[in-house]
Length: 63
Image (cartoon, rainbow, N blue to C red; front, side, top):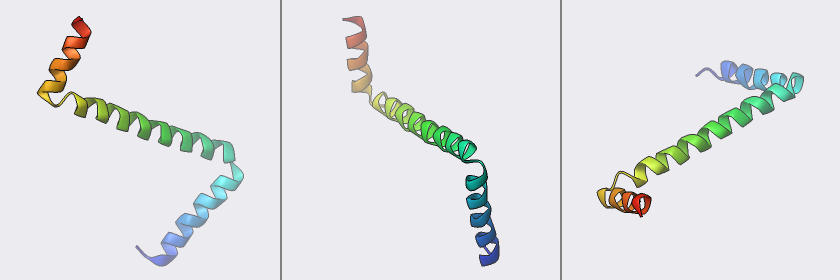
């Protein structure tokens, strides 16, 4: 990437954050929450990928 384009992109992000901090905080919160939800759902899916884990989870549900 050209250095001038990178500088302009960084400058535009800084200017947007100065002019509308609420929108930047909202977008940041959305990104963080979506990352947390994705990691949590991936962890749940990975926990059930092992057959023994599935059997233990089913055992806990039915007990």
